[in-house]
Image 1: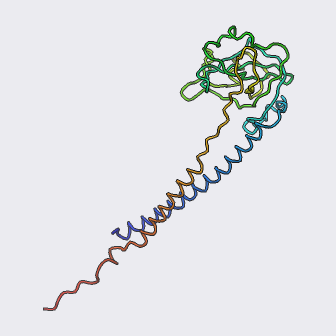
Image 2 (image 1 turned 135 degrees about the horizontal axis):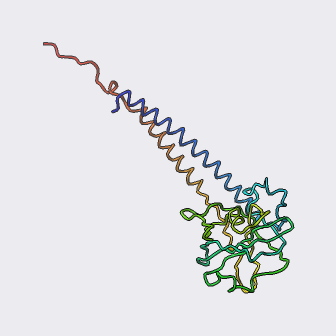
Length: 248
């Protein structure tokens, strides 16, 4: 059985572990409530009637994360000559997102018009879908994706893009007065079928309940260890008393 010093250390460790794991479990329960509220709010935005895009006066102070996935509508003229293709892997396979500047009364907004397969990479192969004149775009407001993907940085000098980095694309294309967000166009069909819009994946990973259960289970194990440590007799309580020698 453990000596008194080791027993006290074990008791302290069990108490510390219990407090730590209970705190982590409570934090994950709070995160679970936050995530469920976020999912509910985003679901409401996606299915709400479209609203006008934020005005230019709001761009500098816009909390894009708070506005993300808001269903919006923008009117303007496409600048197909400044199209940007961003590497994409979708349920339809590998290809590119087609980002085209839309000149609106508020300024320029990048529109993710949708997905194209390798055979449609060149705009000339989808000329029918290059809408001209005044157009109305409905879709979801999205947050800029700076720098690139994991292990794949954007390379503006080589015109290789792995994320929809609004500021970098605007600079590479010589665009000014550009909104700090972009819009994922909805599934409204383009002539010729390309680009293919409406492929936004709205999915939030929610493992907070499993994390909370794990932390609380560890806390329970620490409590069990604490009980055992308190019950474990030390060397002194295990002794049978003072040594008595038989009389001669």
